[in-house]
Length: 251
Image 1 (tube, rainbow, N blue to C red):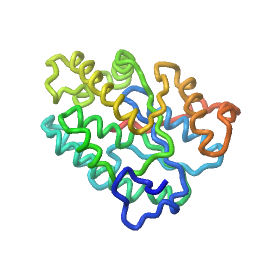
Image 2: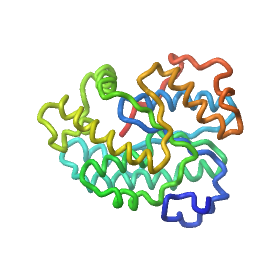
Image 3: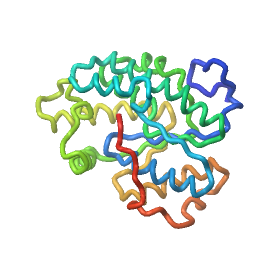
């Protein structure tokens, strides 16, 4: 690979200096990403790998500002996209790149792909989204957890007790009804994820199943990155779900 990024080469960075692995788990809110990242991290650490996790809105630079901007339900689409780009860039420079340079595995609970899809659904062109995130590193693996909208709805209600304004696309005025807006928004996201997935090489995993079934399939995809056969991922006891305390999903 001549350039580890999708476009703009990062200043002072040589591809050979990044010896770690970058693994991305993508999917809609409620698809089980956070649970899968926790399960995957547990397994990788048991296997002896140092793991650093990351996700959306975790930058110490602008995460709180994004939270405040979203509270009033008046955040514009372009401003939202640019704020999230800053959040990602800060984490890339100060967290992701240093971890990869140290030989660690970075597990990303969503990456630029969700941000690109959100921007396009809100009116940006695909080319604008490509260029905005051209500085992003190419992951070693992108897993997309694919779940039916009704499953996403059920999980969101069970976890939060209600639907989120932004995750339901209410800012797009698709419907005055929160539930109708949710399904219309998920449909638009799904269509754009199909484009992004084809262009950026997603490995799609059926996330309508029990988390341990999903995890077994994801492990089989991850194992070859470390020189192990897929079957090696199924060996050994799986960590009980009750032991895991995944971070709350952020986005």
